[in-house]
Length: 309
Image (cartoon, rainbow, N blue to C red):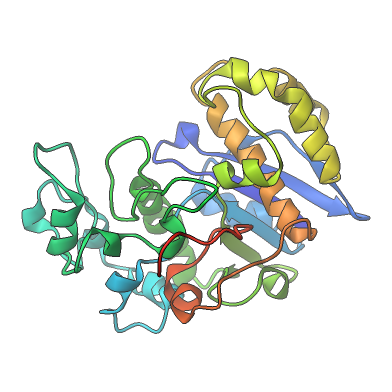
């Protein structure tokens, strides 16, 4: 089979994918490359006719408090229904234009803006309703940003817009052979020749699953270069052999340019995905119908958030 992980961004220059092919129980991984034309991504991944597992560093799912008012059966049906609705993806500059049909906010920083006001504009009871359960803090990591929030370094809303609008929704509309984990089943059950299974994979989560710790910011080359010996050991533990270009990139800390952190994340995400594919981590999803139908989960995550769902 083929495993791949794409570190997604609104900027195509920071959108990198790392691929590996499994044969005889071991993996051969290539160096990260730019995703390039999104319309050609699925055909490139499916060219060999093998099952493909594709990890994506972006949200796949909706908060349950928002989903409770939807008429669709589940998140995949919701995505398909976004075809021909470009207004859904327009980020509101002020709360005056925020609504369930235009939920992303804010387009820029505004004095006095709060997530509580954002939640109220969406008809939610409070700011906690903006988050999926898997976005909330666990004993292992802090909380992630809510899906519809689009401001700050920690936000993921813009990546969701770029991937959903420009790639996933058009692919679903065209009946492309893609399946969405965990909404349509377990990871291994969904894998089939000629099919791409999309799963939400966070490099920061995968880094911990691989037993790796950066001694500084991932945005700097030096900490990434210092991690090279431990990263090579983690790859060996996952039975992943890098090709010459990837081995050189690991040794060099993924380069000194601004895209170095994105290439790094694409490799770490791939190792997290492979860990679940090969059983080093469980294909765990909480037994909660809201999570399985609407909210989704982070692949490989077993730590439950603090507090009730």
